[in-house]
Image (tube, rainbow, N blue to C red; front, side, top):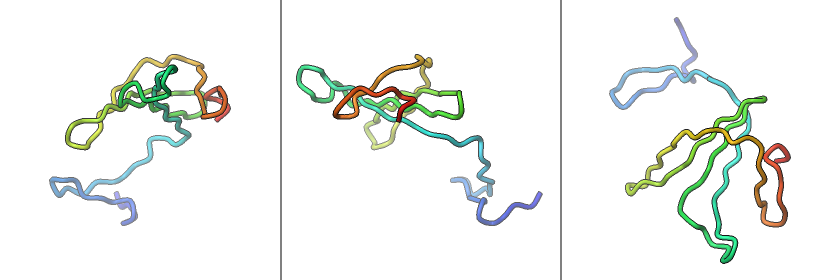
Length: 93
């Protein structure tokens, strides 16, 4: 098959590959803070990938070498997050 040059990339091993779209949508990323101090409880974040009515959730954990590990987690359904002023639902963002 022939693909436009703009969608081709080279892997670390030098093999040519095609960047192929899986899906597209919205995302929400949030962190955890201590309600008493207002400071981060840990250096971890949650990433929600939202496509239509489907949602995938991942913990983002920093590694020592500056990279990040994404760990899939069970989808917990609707929840509220603090936007700095008020509680908002994920669907409202």
